[in-house]
View 1 (tube, helix red, strand yellow):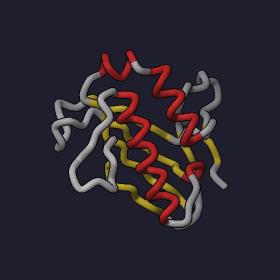
View 2 (cartoon, one colour):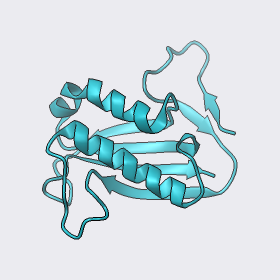
View 3 (cartoon, one colour):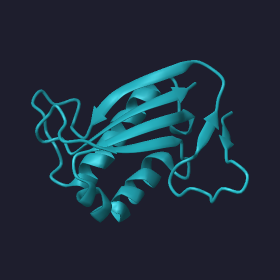
Length: 131
């Protein structure tokens, strides 16, 4: 079972945990972008929210393939190419989050990058899970 760490006196974070203590096998999930991984040619949703949703689904698929569950994700880094597009999609991003992770929030970082390897990619998510 994971233990959420919240320093005394700190305001409770929204959408992430400040720290997570976990015990078990460690799974490192490579950066997942918002494309259909079963397609021979890359197919991306047109919107940021659609790509975020698919990237989360891809992370969860890797976790499940290792025998885990979404709530066992302890750390996540989200890379986005456009801060304004991310902020403008927060309602849809939140809905996608709840769809895949419910109310589970790992320790997280969000990083704005100039570009991702795939030209159409707007978001990439890497994760660590303790199974």
